[in-house]
Length: 389
Image (cartoon, rainbow, N blue to C red):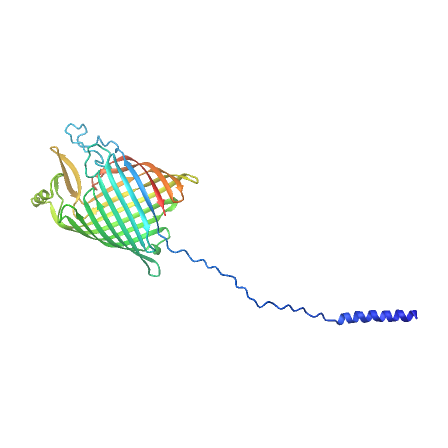
């Protein structure tokens, strides 16, 4: 009986194990919900165009040119013939308001107004007082030649109160810089037309057909180079007198009458002129923190070199206490350099104030090609503020 019980127990165990091996576990099916939750998709739109630009207000003081009181034909001033260096350009101030507004993606407007005032008592010389206004409007026509030529138009108006002259000019500007090495940032050819008129005389005007070249290049060691050429054919409303000597105070009628009796003089109603500017720039940072920046700056070069088809370049001399203008050369140049130190203080992210002090070294009075001489220093100081938006 006992053996039978053990046998039956063994069979039950073997049967249970065998059943367990053959059993299949049925999968558990979980029915997913048919409800679909759609999350909102936020698409950030690119910000639209917003006008931008800056406004800059500056006052600049021009001091007394080095040795300006001792330069002249008569150093002892026994006859009152001293002709001061940079006469008319000493001890004067200039208040300037300038700015630029990017009005639309294609339109830009620039303005600059300068008001000159002499600090010398009873000085009414035309070269020391007056207001100059320059307005420029640009329109971007886009890119051509597979995007390699930037094309724009510029309309300019100027009113030069110091010499009582106004002019208006249109230029088509073709920038070929993308054809050149990357260091060349600007290489613009600009054919154009200008009309200029004098406020006091109906026939004292000219038309000019011109072709200008503007370039700007980054050089090694942080130098920058600007080179510009202005070529123009002038057509005058009234005849011009060339290669002629006349008293500085002579009227136009007297000059014309005298030139008709001078076999060397030329009377023409047109002239071709070429002006060249060449500048080099360098800035060295002296100190910078979160709010202050101090820099040493240098610029200099030809400002400008002028060549005229007719002999219009003049020098001056005295004879019997009378000052004469002698137009007897085809070319002239003004060569200068201006080292200076500037300080900038950041008031806010969009407003800074600044100041600077330096000196300009230039051949102020004698610019005729054969006679250019007498370079002298003139101290300068300025201060201003610039707001961007």
